[in-house]
Image (cartoon, rainbow, N blue to C red; front, top):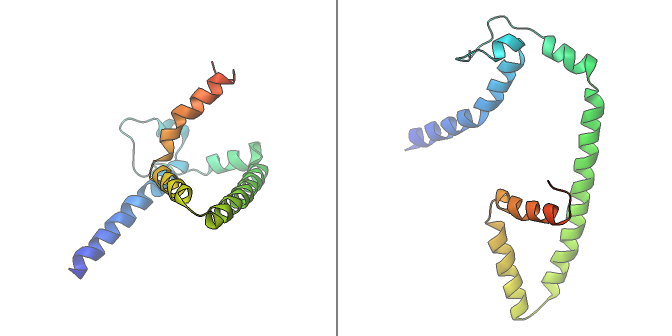
Length: 130
C-alpha cells in the first residue's frame, strides 16, 4: 500500500511540474522551432536569445516591481476588509448569522470562473463593454 501511495504522489508531482518543464524547454527554443508541428520536446538548437530579448528590449524588472506592488496592495485591502467583515460576523447572534455563514460557505464552493458572467453583465451595464 505504501508503494502505491508513493507512486500516486510522484505521479501527481510529475503532472503538476510538467507544464513548468514544458515552459522552461520552450523558452530555449527559437521562434521557428516553437511553431513546428508536431512540437519537439527538447530544443534542437538551444538558444538564450529569448532571455536576451526579455532583459534588453523589455522593462522586465519594472514589470516585476509593478506586479509585486499590485499584489501587495490587493492582499492588504482584501485582508483588511475580510477582517472587518469577520469581526462583525463573529459578534452577530441569531438566525441571521447562520444564514450568512451558509451563504458564504455556498459561495466558497463555487469556482471563480462562475462569476465571469455576472462581471461581464455589470461591465456591459456600466457601458464599458462592446
